[in-house]
Image 1 (cartoon, chains in turn orange, blue):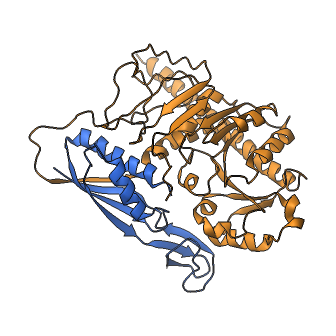
Image 2 (cartoon, chains in turn green, brown; image 1 turned 180 degrees about the vertical axis):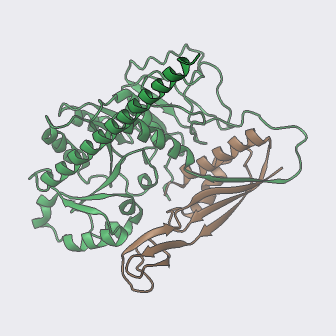
Image 3 (tube, chains in turn purple, yellow; image 1 turned 180 degrees about the horizontal axis):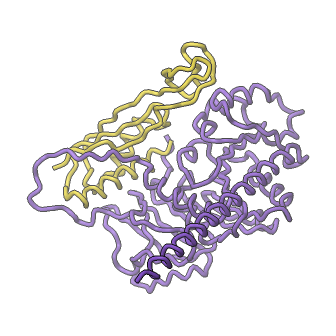
Length: 342
Length: 113
């Protein structure tokens, strides 16, 4: 069991944002005051880091909340909450036992945020990819080379997820691409809500590529939809070829597997066909690309896959906009016809 | 996997309903957990105990209904039972399987005071 996932007094920081703390206490109470310390809380986001305190009981927003567009979070209250407690709401005299039907997905809240992210990406023609792997598979190096290679073809921005440090975002920024680091504290995965905030901060341009480098972990990120178009799992040949069987959920959730660090194959006993066979046992439709960020092997296919995805996202956006424009024209003509009536 | 996050989500769903439906205490919680969902039910129980402290769900009995894994075998053109993601089709021993059930993670119902 992963005892660190979202438990304990972990903290989430989104680099590049200044934000007050949001708290949810052990008793589940919700803040209705402007700020824990009574300080004025301006939500200016102009500073360096967003601190999201996640208490032992954890939290998720329960209010609806559009991530697209403006960066100021006016959530109707003065703090960002990952959740709202019961706030002492119980009706007196209610003592009889009764059954309450719930039928609700446990990940429902995450999925709602993922849906909002996906909608925002679709409206802006953003091709979002969620890169997942174990730590040390070479995600960041691969990403740096990918960004360099895509220069002049498509704009790329990056959300980096790690428990601690902004090292990876620094490495990405050194390539010239905009990047925001999310530090999950003790959390072992990014969730859709964190990504929504990071996207607000990052403000990726329309018709661009958004690479979300998840926390290095082959287990938990598989269940958390971030609103991405595809999950891409990266497996280094320095790992075992049976990783797809050992961590099947991730390989089942991914559409593409990058078998990375192939430049090291001559020094290893790694069985490439067996690894691919294992991956296809779990996910018969998974696309496999052999890559090396050192030699550039496989980059042609990988970059083509990205640019094709970006192009399709852009095309869908224009269809949406075109569809809306047609609808506006149609409604305007109907309105004109109606107001023209005596 | 991330049972603590999931347990926290369960508690939040319960808290939302507690406010909406006006109950103060939950006696029992029924969860439906698919056998391919990656959720370790014992870990879930442990985390639920921790996550439900000082909430209406504290001390509630957790009833976990495990749902079987099912998949569509493309070779057999038939729905088959699978116990794990890396299992072959029990009929043809092939791996051309598309999981169709068993990934559920739902709060089904509550018994409340």
